[in-house]
Length: 352
Image 1: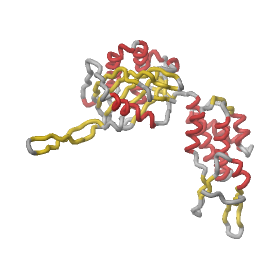
Image 2: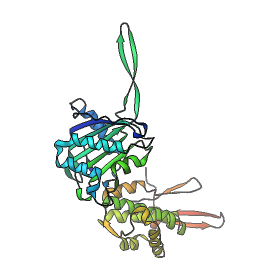
Image 3: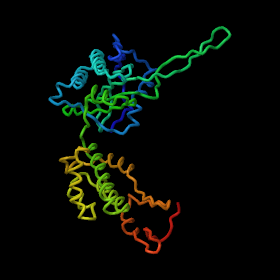
């Protein structure tokens, strides 16, 4: 979890990169930008708002040989080791971004490189580097009095409500390649920012593992449990799975299967499905890991607990009290109507 509420912009450098394939130039400012009390709050909202609204999927710098050969990792380390050199290193970062700007779809734009202090991540206060890029220009009107008339002047600028690209590199987990958050609003070339410029992989912490494994379990429910059983059992299987993650601090696969799979015949199916699909979720050799509570909460919100019937009726099952559906909902077949039915037991109707 991150908290940017008390974060301070210590230093800001502003440069511009063009597109190399169109022979556009690079412009490097000689001095850092002179921050003032009027513009700092606007910049903080412009830079940080996308990360507050975004689900926290962390990345880390990655290299096939060693991180010491990774351009952005070494430049970030240079700044963290000597914050006074941030402006000179910001020029190197901008040149590195310029070298990756070869695809004809890549837009030119301004690059903002900020040194940030008092950043909170995982309950640790540290520093961070922010690299942001604005690309899309917006038309706006200015007004000027000329004699007895008010003239309209059409100008272009950036919209402070939408950051096009950005990343936060936290001075945290250096040995793993630093913890990084990134956004890309204009994904005309998805590889440009994430792969070519940053060159990152997913940060495989407990948050990552919990999300990936729960997504894998959800797909297993849809692809295997539903065809083998029915919609109710698919929902109840996911219900039991979510509750397992919610009540345990550590995931252990054997215990999980024994607890959530009512039908023992599905255990071999689960293992076979995992063997086939594990690379998609990065869980090939994963059988135990610490469970991240925040990831469970996020996943629970996305899991549907509703049975939709072709008679325009919905049955909503309770994820908080799953035993109710087990005890009081039965599925059957009506020979006379040649239709399935759900039988629901209750004592009295609750007032809404």
